[in-house]
Length: 385
Ligand SMILES: *Cc1c(COP(=O)(O)O)cnc(C)c1O
Image 1: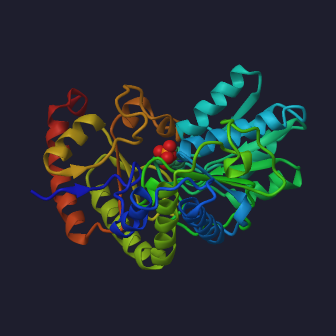
Image 2: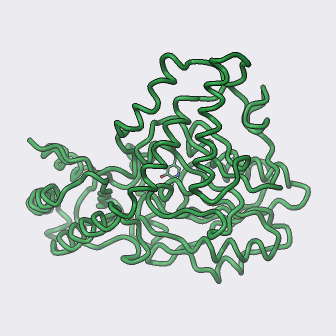
């Protein structure tokens, strides 16, 4: 049986070139980058090269990149770090209602500390309205955190416009770019952001390593205190192999993006058009302001979980929305924010393409999907009532 992986928004397989770049730092080149002898200098050089390369790709300076353990840590560091540092300027933060839990639950923890958070709504297309953002601004707003693209429905937000307005008001702008780094051109100056999170395992790098861009002049209270690593912004001996892997993966993604984007958009649109031919089915999120690899749909009268199990039996790996909420019975907060009713949000399916998916795989998925949906609906009391 074919095995078809269509959950690249959850994680991607590590590329062999990336693993090869990392391997020396897991074996012979094991030194601690803070040591002065040869092994240490070797590791330091690898970190410096990785940092320079990552900085160049996103339009940043060498010293503006801090390596972390994940996208989640980068989000926490950006948001808590800025909220704590600038707490005497104000305690109001603006975010959106469709953020990843790495942002949303960080906001919740700041609310317990007395910060006030405005959660901007999205329209039915899953997009934030810039006017809503302007309305939410206050004199005591210190931070804005809006994701670049959503991990469930793939919508791409107007970050450059929001960032520009934030800057006109002297407010710090953070974006969670975990879904876009590698996939889209990400330039911190074009996006008008001060803080930007990303994570290697979403662009064919290793798990457990991420980065945060911190614009020169922005101070953050560190989450982790200790040694002088990362210019005292994030203590702990550097994950040399992981950081080398992150940089290698981002370089490859950046170089090959023109080649893969067109192909993915073609397969994405084929999948969307094919799925929408099934009756009582709708696309979630904007058709145009959308990640090249994201297909998110809802099937009425169906439980997304049953659909996933049936797809799995046919060798197809998909998701009901977010790896972080699967297992819970609550429908996705993102789909509810788009205005979907609970029972419809329960019938969601997210298929996210990767660079190696083929046309034949998409044909196979479309062929498999229709009879599964039909069978599940036949079993559903709602479908017949
Ligand atoms: C995956 C993801 C994260 C979390 O990144 P980790 O490295 O897995 O912690 C944060 N935000 C978004 C939008 C994501 O897709």
